[in-house]
Image (cartoon, rainbow, N blue to C red; front, side):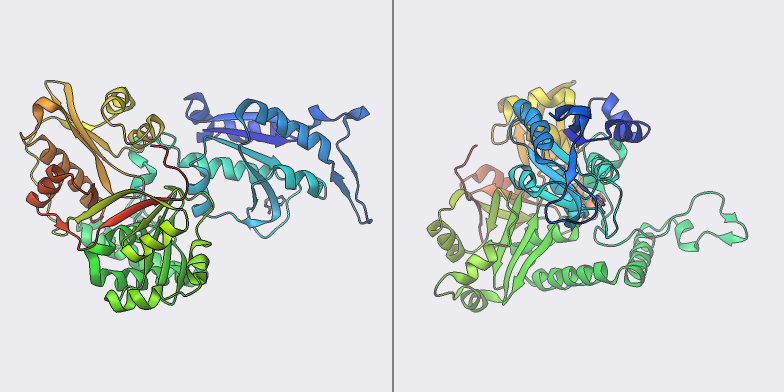
Length: 476
Ligand code: ADE
């Protein structure tokens, strides 16, 4: 990922970032920083970039022309990339926004100074206005550094292999629980007994309770969100198989409830660019009630809650599919949803299975065409792709998609029907179980080989199909 930072103080940002893990990520080529000094683009003598504000008032304003020309100089190279203006007047910077921005290849960040920037150039260039908090800094540089740091953390490889963002804490919506290291007693204070017990279930339970207590005390707003999600998860769990894609997204802390009204629901995973829609969850009568919408305005309201960059709409109700088709959406594929609910670790009957590295990317790209190279590379970097090997030679692979479904299963022609696919799936399921997930996957309708493999392994098929839909033309 490449950050382009438009600023009057490039050295401040460069020096501030290079001393941290971000500096190492730059050295490793995982991210790139392109500093653009707005002052280099002024046409005024003495390098001036500011002037008085029309209508009066204290302070100076950054003028439109140098900002616009500096921005254009970047666009000439990378095209019209997403452009964030850091300002106290922006939307609050949250982890959801961090995830969303982490999906960009090129990101421009514009730092203001003085009393701000002429509104006309902001209208011409800016796609997002972001505030890092309800206070006012002397300039946008610190805010830009905060964004670069938080977004870079999510770029696979930046935190190191063992701390992949995909495997992050399960309690995504809560504040972190307290942690302890050696010695066992310090300053007369003992590490909580449960952490020394070696009982992972008790440790997890204790951590969750602590996280809840902390969040409720310090951030009642976050806690309310957490409780709303928990309530929805419980409600949807009554029909677990049909709703697994939504509940897993919510449990993992990636799914956000963006709309919930009169049994109409929209949950978004911004980073994956996926929105999951549901109308009524009380059986068919509830569905009919939630879809009763004579002039279509309720559905319009629901759809308008989707983030702008949503690429995928996932639907499990045929009537809703028809409504979307009538609005110009298209069906990419109709799938069956399979869920592994037993929770037992599965035997893996193949010796050579390991996590893939970038050295394996070419093989994966050559044999999997549903996704582009960029996506597959990101999945490998995220540490969620596994390969099967025979005498060191790769013969197949599997992985977990961004939104959480298992998939991308491939076994070489000469090795099919010999248990390789089963071993890969078992291996992937075991890794997901370790993370406290409920493994699930979508199989394109008609792929009977995959369906019988999953059924044979004890995965249950949901009663409803899953439609993957898109608003614009499919580019696969
Ligand atoms: N520039 C000045 N104050 C800021 C803030 N709180 N967030 C983002 N940019 C800023």
